[in-house]
Image (cartoon, rainbow, N blue to C red):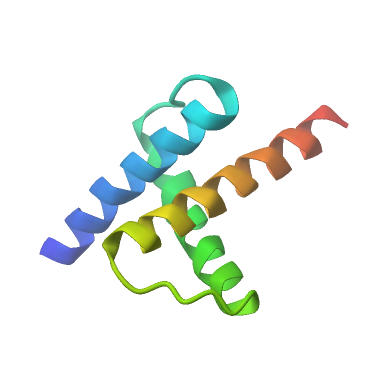
Length: 81
């Protein structure tokens, strides 16, 4: 249960950071959590695909934020069409 709560908190932070990078502001707590968690999954996939060694909290956080930013940019492109 503690890990789940920690994942939600970190997901919210990741989503908030990605929202600031892409849009200049956060998007609300629930959206931040969803974007953060999906971004972490995408970042993990990308690190494996690109053979990037992600070991440690800060590098994992960086890849998660990168994944969330990519996710938000893709969503923005889809919405604009």
